[in-house]
Length: 123
Image (cartoon, rainbow, N blue to C red; front, side):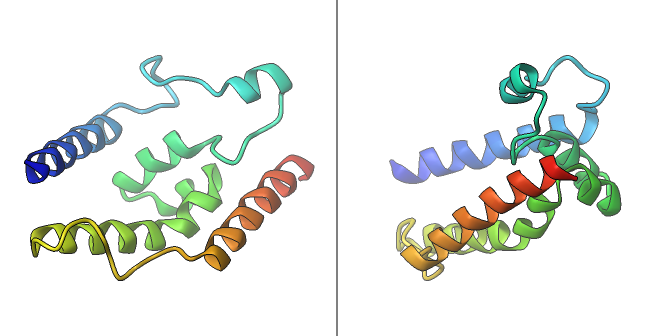
């Protein structure tokens, strides 16, 4: 039964990627706007992620880096995690993966996100 949920999640992810590929967040009202930016005028760590995903899916990596550099830098790690999880599921071992985020990695990632948040609002 778990595999059905994973299959549905994969289908949903592919459909979402299709929407991001075809619909430009910069020109569409389909996507939600950032409430933090709306109320403070500052950019959160996720600001620009929708535009960056659209640019990546369309092969415009320098534009994606301009929209949200943190997303572009973290993409290989995210893809490795997703791939490792998918491999575990396909090999009937469950979602447990050899690519685990231990406490040190989580603290480093949190510090990187906070540093990115501060730096992008200073410059």
